[in-house]
Image (cartoon, rainbow, N blue to C red; front, side, top):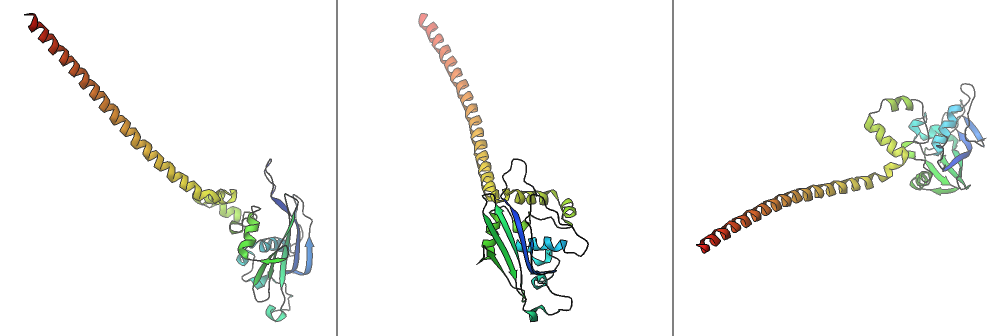
Length: 236
């Protein structure tokens, strides 16, 4: 997806490398990719498997990749049934060029027994660190903000406003500030409550001041009348 006009891109996919992945036997290379690249071909030529390969390398679970198990991702010929007996492994490597012109290689491997491992620049790493590195380029594995699968558009149209709002928060990255937002919201409510209390106290003080001023005026008026009466009596 092209970045918004004026936005600074985090980087782009430059090359995709398969090895014994799904319908691709041996090592196959795709690329270099441009800002917009289309994959075309007849039915059954492996177009969807390119999408699956990108998804697989980015950590998407196998149930989203038209396979019930990870070992289903490993290439096998029609006559081959027991992938475990073949002891064959497969992998997908993404070569990602960052905005700073650094080349980063993300690779995910799957073995015949269904286990997988993750590598960054050829070094084995934990899944959490793998996803964290992807996240630094705004590639969020858990919400798949980098892929649009078949049926996603229809499902998005059927979501409730609350669900869409949550997803937009995650896609935009603002979800990372939710806790801070909630804290500020609570603080704002506390401040608002304090202001309400202070306003009511001010109103009460104003009423009390008005009452005291009225009482003072009445007392001064009464005192003035008393003095006038005493003055009249003194003149007599």
